Image (cartoon, rainbow, N blue to C red):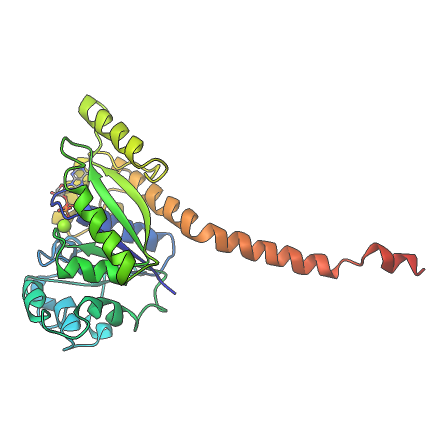
Length: 283
Ligand SMILES: Nc1ncnc2c1ncn2[C@@H]1O[C@H](COP(=O)(O)OP(=O)(O)O)[C@@H](O)[C@H]1O
Ligand SMILES: [Mg+2]
């Protein structure tokens, strides 16, 4: 089953889309088959990965959500062989209104993803900057969520609303959703405020902040205008380094237990093959 990770924070400009694009790309480079769902009507992730808006206006996440198209017909290839995307454009604004009276309106994305969740190792959802029906759909479909936080003044403002929404979702729709981590973005080591905010967040979310830290890096802000993820735009940049490190950290967190488990099982099966002491005493 896919690991489905929602990148959520109702604030705009905190690095959700940058994280969605670059985390998804780094997972794909780490040989994980990955699908990026652009779930923001602004469609920044779609354009940022080099898709032409005209090319997907007839088939995108909106058509999937309202049940007009199968999700498999709304999946597009990217420059990375293991990364696919379901794009979005401003039609998605309409979906929120059209779905108001729909049956199980908060489970539309979840049921759409059911058709592809055995195809991908990871599904990354770039959420819209709101706590409306779209974000509720993302959090209902997700197994995990990441909260990017800009290391700036007011970083924690509004956070309690997001955490309350998640609490509600966990108590009703999706009890299994887990916080994968808080991600500090646009960190500037030369700026005292950045350091102060970062240590506040660490204090507040003890043990829940990713070790990987995303620095403020101009290459990260340039790459979408070339339609490329950072690793294809400038592999040697600090931005590439940071998102590769984040992908490694996530793979380690989510996959290590299974690996260890299978190693344990393997060793256990080997142990069974070794004759016991009593077996020798027969000679
Ligand atoms: N680490 C970073 N360094 C420099 N600029 C960044 C970084 N992360 C994001 N940006 C820029 O900040 C702006 C907002 O980021 P974005 O990822 O679009 O946020 P959101 O999706 O939360 O609205 C964009 O112009 C983006 O290019
Ligand atoms: Mg965005």
